Length: 429
Image (cartoon, rainbow, N blue to C red; front, side):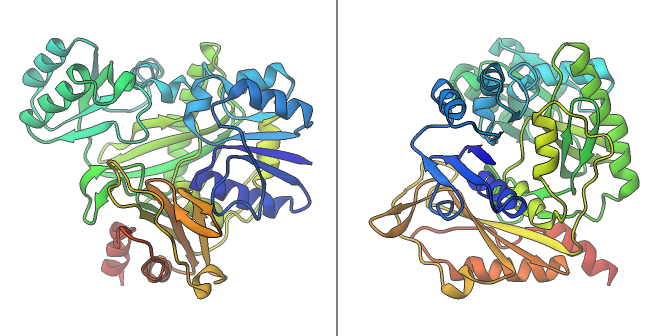
């Protein structure tokens, strides 16, 4: 069997790690790769966004399964191109991935489907958007409608902050084309979680709930990032609540997409706020979350390859189920100097042997590369240090210990990933 991973970040490293465990005899390929993936897959000198070249290469190599990691190629129609070649591909089509590529579209879809979410308005005209801020008052969330690498949502607790957010997007084009249209919505109160659902377009297999930490600073301070860490599972989400999420959010959304001729096959990521009125959708993504994937997959006991193959081949998930290991996993992201702004790269990493070979640790590389025999930084988020342990407290301590032991100039990370869950456990004990 031959498998291709499109992408080269921490999420793709985690997917590659799990699929390699499911099928160790298979031949794996990855676009570009990073400093940690060479032992698992052949690195291709092709960019994830070079869709024609990738499709031609996959066809010539008789690739059995292609898994798409990042959102950009999905929004650009990579699945459509691969399927035209008759290639089994895991991920939604361009039309279906609009649920992530356009927050304005997603909000309208949810409204029609009756899916609970924040009340919102959509604007392209800056004067109208600023008038909305003055009329509604704060707190508000101002979002770039397009793809903004997880950084396009600004929580605004004052009118001045909301007006500044609108100006930065619509007048100053701080987010480029992603911010030409903005969504202004009420700020939901509660705890935010992520649920990834494998789906054939009609049925859904929810994965373990996880919690991402978006703000760069401890105590959830500072600007939003692509994610500074995550943990799984989340104790507030029991079986009954997960069933409610499937019934009230996943299934109506999938039905509405089918009704529009946008059948969604792949993994649907639901970012949810657990409000007093129940779970409400903050956002949908059309792919595996990053860094949630680095915390969820190490706990998946059953095969990931089997449902991914079934979905990619157009088969049904009827009768499929996922099995999970007991315990918890926690991923701490190490970031480069300057992240989430302009970052410095090329700094050498030192990873102690005791960390690199520890059986309870997984190092999922993102922004790293091999250069003259050295491992150096090559992006904003450098790697995720995932620890697996019987309890979240033990996983947190192990992850933070390892994060501290890895060194490179400018390294920074959050030492409080999982703090809400740890506080819950402490109160309960």
